Image (tube, one colour):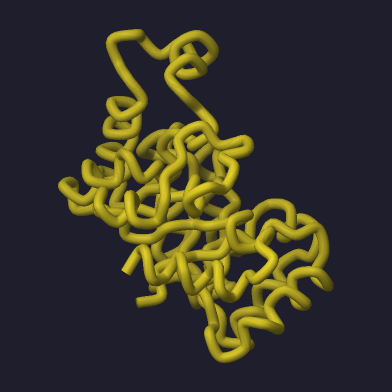
Length: 230
């Protein structure tokens, strides 16, 4: 099952395409985030779709409902497989995002998910910087935001693998970043897990970046993630 998404956080199209040469025939799911999208634009997404790749377009929209609706209508025209918004934008904004996709020619089948609590945020940041009441932990915050996403009619959420079981119980798909192979550095992520731990926690998809893209043998690292997760 193709549920390991490679985070393609390269700084140029040339580096991305060179990386993908070794994956001929495997057609992995790709995450295109802000760095690549803001540099190369929608033409890159169209090209990758034409090459047969499934795409998670990770732009995390967060603005007033009308702006998000109009932006999501444009994203819908790209026919990506998954895209997202920030759940903190509120239920009305998330509903507007879904409406924008539905009004586009190619967005009706795009799964729309909402970012709950970023994997770079721990409880110290949650309480002391974001001023969330100390009676609530990260899982509580993620659960509340997930309930809002479900109320807005979204398909699922972005969350750490440690909250994935909660999302499964809510009937939502979970796309879980912060995945590292055993022994790899967590770097700027605070809440990380291995593919096998994510699977135990009922994650639907895992997003793996540097454990694959920074590996001496990216294809073998990708296959190892697939094997562990499936």
